[in-house]
Length: 454
Ligand code: SAM
Image 1 (cartoon, rainbow, N blue to C red):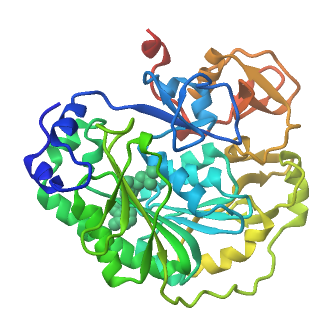
Image 2 (tube, helix red, strand yellow; image 1 turned 30 degrees about the vertical axis):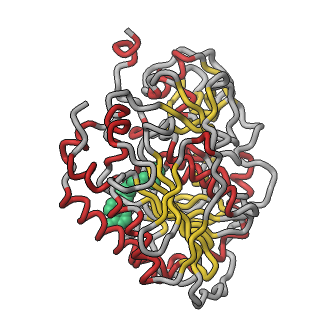
């Protein structure tokens, strides 16, 4: 890889732990590959892989397989995520030992790495709002959250400023801000060519704007976790100093075993703690993360009065799809979605400020003859265990995911899940002599499987 920009190295002089030669040398090595397991979809995948020390479900992979050609990836059994950024697990685990009944915002969420991690850490009574302002990226986020399969993760697509309409609502807010991306040079060499000092400054200004817009939505005593994948102090420690000047907050720190190689740094003016990940010291890419507690008084939103819109009659028609627990079944356009009943009051609150792109888990819709199930429920962790299913081998599973003809033994007429290694991939409908494949078109694997296998 080419040399790191001189201006970047200059800005890093004096930063705790910085070693220019070692950083440069680490950039001649390939990026580390890692993935995080879905605790609600246990499988034998990566069983012998080395664990990521700061994340119980994180695994280092010795090589980068083709994830597209692994049906378990499509089933949401794991998420491919950079190891350093999994440190969010350690922070949330340490700073919030009780994780029930929380309201959590992941403000810059696409493609969904931090959101899938947060979802796995929260109790089902907590609600995660996973937001992405850029519409096409919000679609990718929604797809990844559908795969992960949780009902208490809702997706919005709003500008950060819209969240100021939810004063004091969130207990935890994660801002994984858009940044100049120097920490990911090993993964994407193009980013190195596009790096400039001017962009670092633009990013720092945008980070301030995003934080200022979202800050009112954090509760008094609530926690803000700020992260970037940039090495530049202008986007890291200097943002902490700016926060300390303009907002009332106290820094938070977490225990840090020395052998992890992560360096605690302190912002120049306020001395707020941040954590730096540098590939010459950690098994992972460049990353920065810090946590603060809001100390200023904030008027919290009062829960709005609401009448439950739970449709019992429709729910009775769809309940064969679900595990035996209480859900609220709500009409969303032509379809019905199910949510945990304790979150119904949140709809009215949130809708006043933001557009709810997806709530809970879509169930599908009734037709004159039957229930037409949504793809989402096939991937849901709340799906009933009693739905008829067909086990596929890897080749059949990949053909299903490509929406190609799949040779399967004929089964009774009606709806069946297709599963690989015990994990559902989607729906087929048996017509007695053939199957219809109900995988949504835009979910289809587009690469040529044979070509890639060769
Ligand atoms: N948290 C994500 C994850 O772990 O997968 C990665 C987030 S990425 C670093 C930053 C995200 O911020 C991008 O998805 C980008 O589209 C979004 N973004 C870009 N401009 C933004 C803005 N002005 N306000 C909020 N988010 C923005």
